[in-house]
Length: 361
Image (tube, rainbow, N blue to C red; front, top):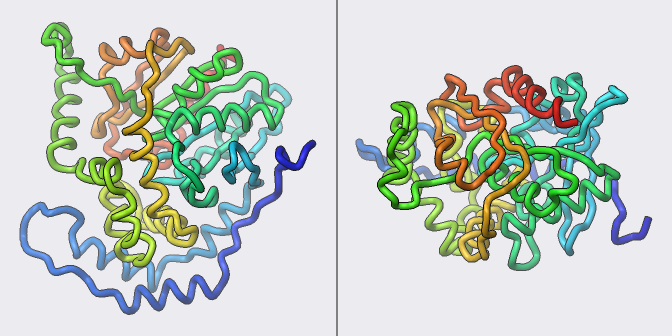
């Protein structure tokens, strides 16, 4: 194997000095004032999380949990790519590449690794370039399509000639692109959201079910009150990066807007801590900037696709999704509020993934 295709073992081992520096910064935190009203992530919530980060949270325990699975790095297209590679003991195991989103990380999938391995799936779980242990991106252009091409190269480099792609959040956008760029090898795509929106034609709304209109209302609420981060990430990510890189409390307050009370404090802090220790709070937001300027692919995807969504989170509307994906095989909506279903309901998501991919092996 040539050096440019080398794959190196990786272990998470944050220096003790970095842990002490974090605690020193948390102890010196200057919290924002607060007045009544829905102004964003509250100071009370940030104070609660900082208190736990200082006095209850155990990074080393989560570090050990990450290191319980084989991890590696390799260079693809000039960028370091970190990934977990958890192989099943079953001889007939089928490979899947799982992609996280923002402000998540590979931690999103820790709860499904053992169940999916037991169900007969090899798992490749990369950190998106610019995120976590893949480190900051070193050049412009890392949009969803480029990430998808990197994943196709990664799976080929690992010797997988037929595989599936699955993901959440940004991973629900990247995974269909993996199927688009590598259709000869991708058997299917499983996502938790389908980002297909109304085109503006009033006729599109004819025949929608009540639950579809509820989903649209959920989307409208999000766009009107919680989407400011998307605009800033897409326009001036570097302006924000200075604060996210210098202040763990600032990073926590910003990322916590999409790590809300539907997930536990340990999940919140482990994801935030990974961004902090790897100094990728700023670089991760560049994905939005790159996507806002990318040339969007024309035409629908053609590989089989399945959705497992949450009723309390925007997951998509099938009628609109069928415009962008020609072969939707399953559309399951769970009675859940969480944006992170692989963490919230790992048993159900494992069953959904197995039911979708088993006939495609």
